[in-house]
Length: 309
Image (cartoon, rainbow, N blue to C red; front, top):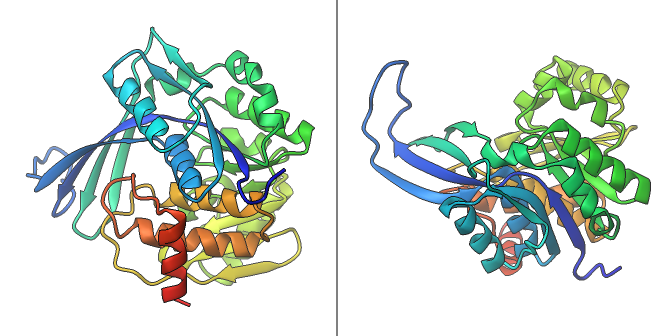
C-alpha cells in the first residue's frame, strides 16, 4: 500500500445544494430577502470524497444519484475533482438528493435535506463493490444513507482489517449499534449530545460523553468542537487539539472537510492527534470560503500550516 497516495472509499450521500445568503434567519412564517444565492454540488459523502482527493488520496465514491440534471452535475463534479465514480449507482425511480441551506452573516447555517436517491442506495450495490472497500486504506461513511448500507460497509471494512471512520451526521441513535464496527467515530458537539446524552463542554460532561460512547462500543472518539478545536480519545487518554483562528464566512461543509482530511491523515499513517491537526487546518481554510465546495488542495493546506506554525 502506498502511503504517498492512500486509497480511500467513501460510502455516502450525493446532493445538490441550494444555498441562500441572508442577514439573519427568518422566524417561523416570516419571509426575508436573501442578498444572494448559489447552487452547488454537495452531500456529506461527496464533500468528504472531494476533500480527501484534493489532499492527494486516491478516492472512490459509492453512492446513488437520480437520473436527472442534478445527478449528472454531481458526477461531473466528482470526475472533475478526480474521484472515481464507477461505483455510483443511478436510480430511475428517485431524484437526486437536495439540501436547502441558509447561511447568515455570522457564517452560521441552517440545513434541510431531502434525501432522494441517497436512501435508494442498496446493500446489494455496496456488496457488489466489496473488493473496493477491502482494498482501501480507510473507509468513510455518514448518516445520510440508510443504516443497513452503513452497517454493510463497516462490516466489510472491519472484516478486512480496513480502518473506518463513522461520521454520525446527522446524528440519530440508530447508529449506536455500529460503534463497535468502526475504528473512529467523529461526531460534532450536538451529535455527541444526541448519541451520548451529554453536551461536551466542561470537563465533567466531556468525560461523561466519552464514557457513554465508549460503553456503547466506540474505540476511538474524535469530537469536533468548531472554534474550540477537537478532542481525541483513544480508549485511555484524552488529547485536546487546538483550533486555527480564522474569520468564518460560511461553515457549511467544514465538518466534511475535517473528515476527508482526517481520513487522509489516518490512511497516510499519522497518529489520530496529528491527523486531527491536519484536519483542523483544512476545516479552518474551508470556513473562509462560501458553499460546501470549500476544501483546500494539498499545496494550500501546506502553505496555511506553515503560515500558522
